[in-house]
Length: 108
Image: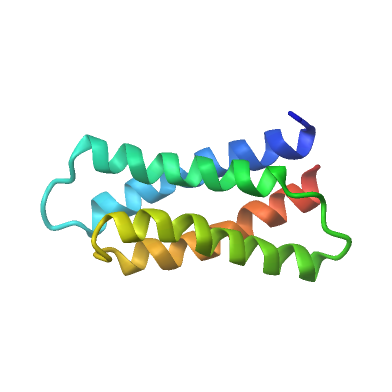
């Protein structure tokens, strides 16, 4: 269950979660609560887990498409829980899904 692919996607998700926290903090005109920032980070970690659990795709194109789809699905959970208030974060989640899948495809 914990394969090299899972390790790569999990670490990628955690690192991109940090990027999300920084980006959200810079975009926000007011201070964001710690629980909100943690939830944002944790959403990216879960995205890494979801992508890591998926079997390795045979082609890079299929892998990237699946990464976008899983990024969309996982990010939608956070986006909808915030009252659809952070479209930028939702869009970034789709892109991050592609990046995580690319890392998992190339490095594992």
